[in-house]
Amino acid sequence: MTTHNDRVDQAIRNAVETALPQIGGIDFDAALTSDVGLDSVQVMDLVMEIEDELDLSVPVEVLAEVQTLNQLAKRLRTMIKDNPR
Amino acid sequence: MSLFDKFSRLAAARAELGAEGTPPVATPIEEIISAAEGVIDGKRVILAGTNNYLGLTLDPDVVNSAKLALDHFGTGTTGSRMANGSYSGHAALERELASAFGWPSAMVFSTGYQANLASIATLAGKDDFLLLDSDSHASIYDGAKLGNAQTVIFRHNDPENLDRRLSRLGSDASRALIVVEGLYSMLGDQPPLAEFIEVKKRHNAWLLLDEAHSFGVFGDRGLGLAEQTGLLDDIDFVVGTFSKSLGGIGGFCTSPHAQLELLRLAARPYIFTASPSPAVIASTRTALAKVVAGTDLRSRLWDNINRLYDALADFGYRLGSDKPGPVAAIILPDRESALAHWKDLLANGIYTNLMVPPATPKGLNLLRISLSAAHTPEQIDRIVQAFGQLRKAA
Image 1 (cartoon, each protein chain N blue to C red):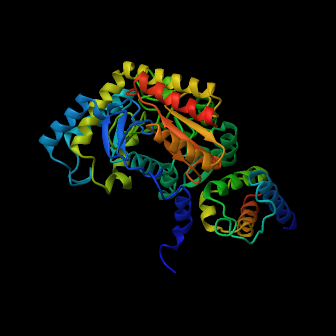
Image 2: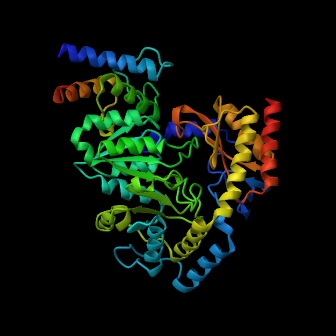
């Protein structure tokens, strides 16, 4: 589990750095739209980076259910656990 | 707390565009003088920001057919295609669209938005998959939301990125519908269609091509990018609109698969809305005949496209697409300079479109020009001169 956690967190950090270099450090508990101020296109770009980092596809429906990176990370860990490669 | 609190960010973005002068969003057009000229703020302007690519909105034959239908059939159908709203004209237009593509089936919808909503939400069901280009039009995203398929986004115009996502689906890819557009309206760029088709075939998936902005513009008969590139036989569904090259309002889906007809029984945006008015169906039928036969119209449009693209490149503007097309999107460094360009052009008698985030991909600030066969060489000269002056002043 720890390996998954590390892998997911690192993938998110890498993705933030690539897709949103202007943001700098990001609070995993901040709401991406209302707190960080991302628009829907920026969220989509970020998720596509995370998908490439983890080599998995994140259905759009998942995005409607998560507000923060920690919530997204939790969903990603479940997806990886359910579909081990 | 109010129901309206959630709109405060949108209201702030709108306010940033300025409260004074002619509004750059939902700009009121007071009069239409011709397909290429109108009146804004009491001033005669060249319309370089409409989607009237072939200039057919005021074509005498197109207008007359609408008038005749209005006199003969009345103002509206008052009902759905499923109930009392299927007139002879609707069926005739569907036959003519299918025949133009050489396919067995076509369906007509009340708007282009609904054509995508209905096709995407209904074709891809609960156990199916949707693969959408990240720069897709809102109607494509909304079609995905309305349906129950699992939706995955791939990077814009990136067949390799699509390939990876389809690979993850394994044999389930045979239940995946890929959606791409023939021309992306924000940047005016085109997809690498042959590469997408190669990926689609390899995974045994399905492909829907939205030709909203490319129908009437590309191909010998104006059928769109798939016709121009000789790839029509490899497409599963073509969606299009009547509100651009065809000069009306409405949309269609056509397919080489005769089972498309089954959507009439299941597509909610087709069933639960009134059918298009007889006048719009009649004008669209006449416009369609002109589009299919319209090599002269396309030749005039392409002369204008090439002239403007060459001039903008000579001035050193950065454009959204390397390949010329009916949309020329000029990428400007920030919102302020995009707004300033828009205002200067309007003051010079040229109406264009201002496009800013969040409506644009990659947070770009754009000035969008839409070309038309109805633009005269003199009007194109005026547009070019206006950009030349802006460039000098910069």
